[in-house]
Amino acid sequence: GNSVTQMEGPVTLSEEAFLTINCTYTATGYPSLFWYVQYPGEGLQLLLKATKADDKGSNKGFEATYRKETTSFHLEKGSVQVSDSAVYFCALTDGNKLVFGAGTILRVKS
Amino acid sequence: DTAVSQTPKYLVTQMGNDKSIKCEQNLGHDTMYWYKQDSKKFLKIMFSYNNKELIINETVPNRFSPKSPDKAHLNLHINSLELGDSAVYFCASSQVSGGFEQYFGPGTRLTVT
Image (cartoon, rainbow over all chains, first blue to last red; front, side):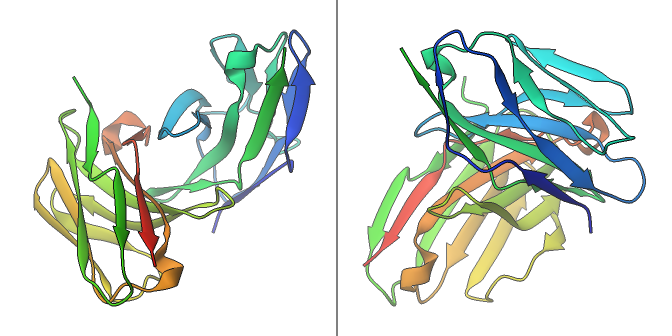
């Protein structure tokens, strides 16, 4: 089945630093790709998505581009805030379900 | 208005007991899911129902039994609880025609002692 690999965390940054969280995938066909975010004590929330190659998903200053040639969907943000501290999950469709990566913990210090 | 709700939020129980977790969604979605999240945040799908029909049943002990009385509800019953069942359980819903965007509940933290 399809699978996704994320960079291990935790990632610790200072406020206003640039963020990249790497995500690569293995899939047959053309899956849709997602980033979800989980704030402490809460459920996952959809952050952004892309449904086909070269699509760019963006939301709340975060963005990720569906790169078919490198099978990647890296998450970026130009200037992180303390409130961005959370666990970030990359995911892709596999038939009638989503497959999630292991999650990357992001800690932003003021 | 809460989109996906779960009860209870916390559940502490002893080994061998039977417990249930309830989930309700008011989004009008046709598909609901149960996930288990372990202490390292790894998220694994357990079950999925589409229009009350079981469509995904991952390798889960048969002590776990989902029940969907209608499209808006998906409950999880666990028999003979074990220490390894301690985790956070998330319910989610989606509209399959909507591209698999899933909406998650707040989670139920189950602790088995």
